[in-house]
Length: 175
Image 1 (cartoon, helix red, strand yellow):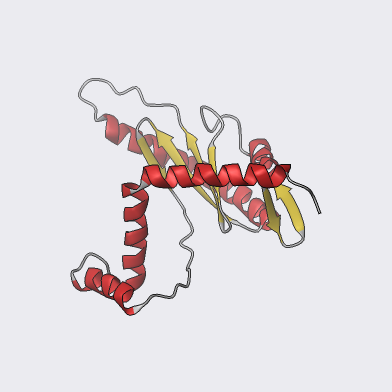
Image 2 (image 1 turned 45 degrees about the vertical axis):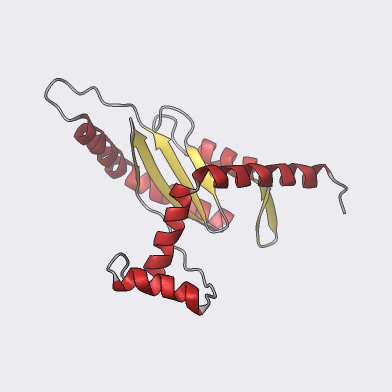
């Protein structure tokens, strides 16, 4: 898939390759996962799991491992992120996984304008009035998260279909 930054065109493989060369090899147990959209590049790597002895909370030990990684790599992650943001025109966010625990350290909250009819605004206002959300913006984000978790299978099918469409486009005639 081609990604653009102004006049510059790059492939997702180019972007992933750049990060593979910049991220120190000893940070993660394997290649980090990378999620890319128009606004952000999210990098989440897996850390070596903890060896918790008897009477030790594994969840707390994993949280500690992630916190340690976050603190130890902060300056280097910021440097890599700044270079990438300049080069690729997207914010860079980081996270780490230890065992079954994943924490995202930084993630862009990108504002998006939308037009809603009265019945749709009423849904958001109900969420705000009931205390589920602090604002319409928060209520809309809550709705998106709800769809993302409750309709995961459908969204996965939709993403798979989009990949097929991209493959057909790439195989088609060039201009």
